Length: 71
Image (cartoon, rainbow, N blue to C red; front, side, top):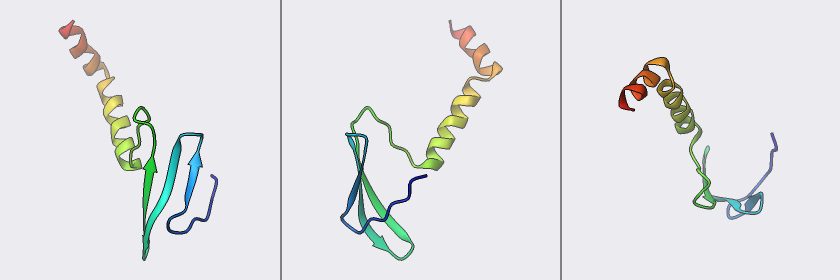
């Protein structure tokens, strides 16, 4: 893991097309802004994990049987 220090209003770049900016710092919360191309999905980690779990469940044997019935 890369660890960087940034102050309010400062940014960092990921690759050539993703900019992460520190927008606000209040107590133990930090607001960040992420500017990325539309084709790059950006999720909070807990949402990303829910999507992965949902996809895993959809690929279960029951899910595959349901798809076979559709086609």
